[in-house]
Length: 119
Image (cartoon, rainbow, N blue to C red; front, side, top):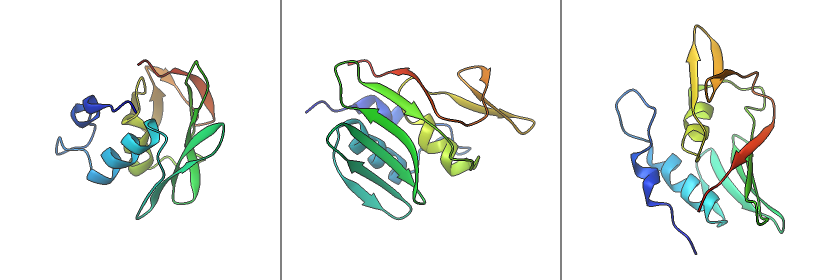
């Protein structure tokens, strides 16, 4: 099973440390392993692995050869949602004057699946 040790250096929080729960949840998500801690969980289904925050499915990793990643805010543009999503590969969310940007482009938070997970 592939691990992603680089996740520990990705961080977006004010004090330069990623929350432990974010690091663990994303590691489990990328490795398709079940996880539950506090408000965050990972569900592993036959064709997709799902990252869940407060009962909302905010990321999907499709278990196919392309390993496509899809994300959404589920309408909740919170710092916690942003942190969880920013920990994923190829995802960079910034907020400027209340406007969310995904990889440099304005984003409404709706489901998008334009990401590939590189091994």
